[in-house]
Image: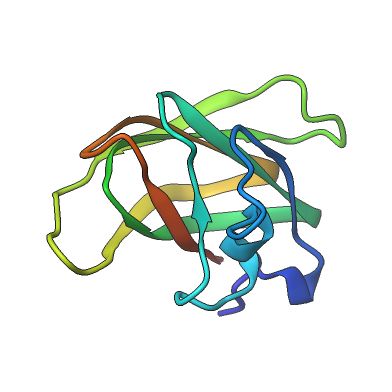
Length: 134
């Protein structure tokens, strides 16, 4: 089971709603939960991951902090302009440690995944890692 979201297998973060130079969006896909992307406040926040090729995805796991509600959308073309809803999840608040939530995508095919954080437990949220299971 390869983690298709890692930068080492050609995935890229092509859009992020916020950008903090100390915590850039690329940290989401570096495979290290000690690095992270941090929002700059306000909701919704979103980021889009593009895969090197079409992927069949059974689930995604998001390691985050202060995320309350997340929607996942997919795109199957090379152009990231039209997305379809795939799943959403309410996260439990965890004080002092990372949230780790797996979301079933039921074997969906995608070239891009859009993650939309619609609400947080605080003004700022962080995403430490996204992993994709085939």
